[in-house]
Amino acid sequence: MSRPTVNDIAREAGVSLATVDRVLNARPGVRAKTVSAVQDAVARLGYVRDMAAANLARQRRYRMVAALPDGDSQFVETLAEALTEAAQSAVTARMELEITRYPAEDAHALAALLGRMAPQDVAGVAVMAPETPVLRDAIRGLKSKGIPVIALASDLPSTERDHFVGIDSRAAGRTAAVLMGRFAGAASGQILAVAQSMQLRDAIERRRGFDEVMLADFPGLEVLPTLETHGSDATLRAVVTEALRHARDVRGIYLLGAGHRALAATLADLGLTGRFVVIGHELTPHTRRALLAGHIDAIITQNLGHLARSTLRVLRAKADHAPIDEAQEQLRVEIVLRENLPPDQ
Image (cartoon, rainbow, N blue to C red; front, side, top):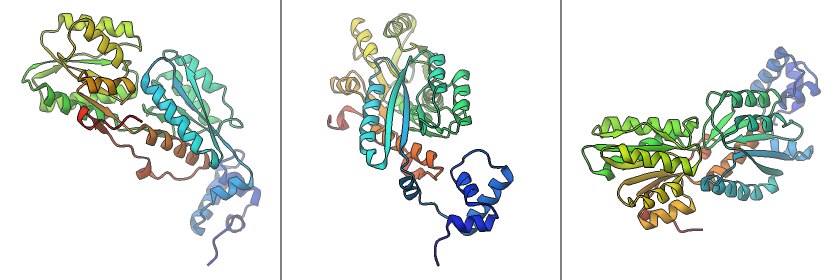
């Protein structure tokens, strides 16, 4: 039996080939009733579109954009390198990626950046940012233009984003709590929690998962209110120094995001290096060195190569209105200790 074609769909739905083309490519200007008729015909006929052939025939190129915060975060820099490497491998698939940076604490600058994007120039956007009202509006604006948007590394579930690419942050926080509780080895004491911003969804979910396990399994260890640094090394130094001055019995420090270098420097200046269990996130050049030196006990991380490749695959699928292989795009939560530290590439 021959495979159904667009001509078959047109006959089945009682519409023109041009209308079928507009529906398959999600172009505007088609009544909802007609869209439904074409989609029903596609389902009845079992039509499967060959997107590679269709895109090759019309010489389509995919220009994707990844919007990342600026600053000196080693995680963001390492992610940018992984995205660049993945994009170089995707050139043969007619894809190109532009990495653009925005001021990390300026949601309005990011919104303006997204607002300038047009569908004739951009096929899809990946965004790593805090979830704020202005960002929700900006993403809604992109969606109204037909530009797919995915959240990268930190989810944006209250927006109209199409997909999230990253690990389960709540599971990562729960994992950090198990390690903290067991490594601390004390029935009582206090745990400092330090985050760049509690507007970041990954920080919110990590703290949620961390608290769930600590309350259930290590009730004697009190997790203190989260100290926010807003990406400033000076702020981290000030809030951690002040907390250690007043806390009674600190046994560990949980760093929910960026700031490993500033924390290490602060503890060294206070003469407290090695005094506490330190659990953090993301394997970077600094956290690698800190693990080797014994200044950090464990890192909860993810494979950034997988994250970058998944980002491009999902953006391509969303641009093509194609299904996503959920199993292929699922990232694992990984635990890195000094004893299992992978070789430096």
